[in-house]
Image (cartoon, rainbow, N blue to C red; front, side):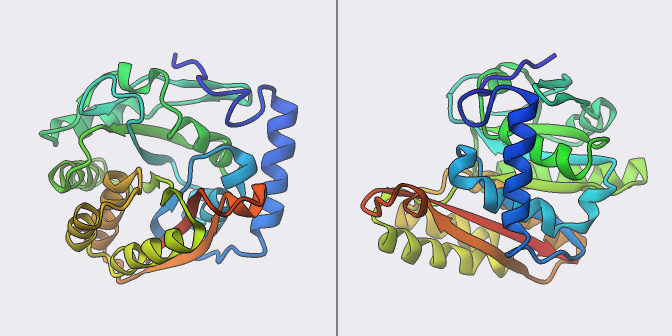
Length: 272
């Protein structure tokens, strides 16, 4: 069992407070959400007071999440521990209850992958996947997860994960939803953050993972989950998506009032 690492930090530490705060995030997100049929999405992973509403907007906007049997959640590795592209095969315990792991799907993914390997250490104290789970529980408490943590966020690593999902779907005869966990620009003035993030968004919404990765490196964009975003792009494009949709964009200055050093958050979905 994977125990909660950031309960009481990124989100409240008990069920009642989590459910109340998540409910408020969803109520606020309804003003922005665009519910539609979609293959994948991008949701931020900061403290809920900052990024809870755009995260909820992503989960609200993907209709398939309501009935999805399996959700592949791909997050970046902030801790520097564990494998380069690590799959968790444990169930995940939260104050709001246990989220079951789709072990069969994950194990089959590993068989279809070169980079992806089983490994719990990368997940043990990493927050990028954990903070998504109360939102998933809110829309679909029965969904199982396949958690993938990427220290290697290269295009090759992203393609490996996306192709493993696609091959496993085909063999097991069912579809999943892919959620990429990522914040956008970090610790720069809000105007500069928005300028950089809009350029990044151009490539993301065009489903051009190659250009997105190339420009991220050339421009030194501080988007922490560029590998997971690339996975969602490659997966959605292979499934037949023609475009991404920006649901919501905001930054921490909207909460703190300090726009000189912000972290930015985007909600994106890839429509069917």
